[in-house]
Length: 106
Image (cartoon, rainbow, N blue to C red; front, top):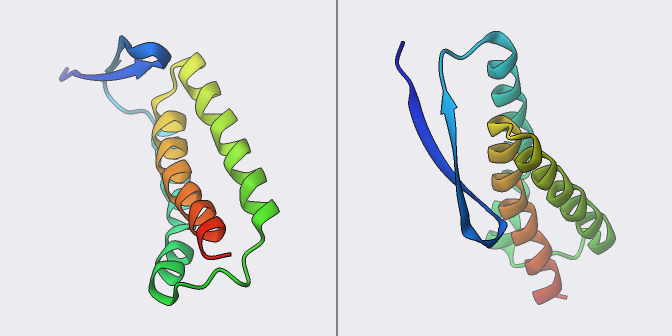
């Protein structure tokens, strides 16, 4: 059995380690769902960066979604679920970028 140790950091940079063994179907489902949900925000980010326009984007919606994603990320860290952590971390970066661009281009 091949095991990979993936370090990640809790708030205040306290190191923790997650040990992954064989991926089961449920874990794969979590990664697949996270990847699709995360990728859904990418076309919007690319469009905003290319057009430099956020006129049709709701500031309130992206503020609420970023708050929700942050809460999911904290939840994933607390229960030590790598699929939830990775999906929400990347989604927060993408959605947060859209939110910051919305504020910048307002």
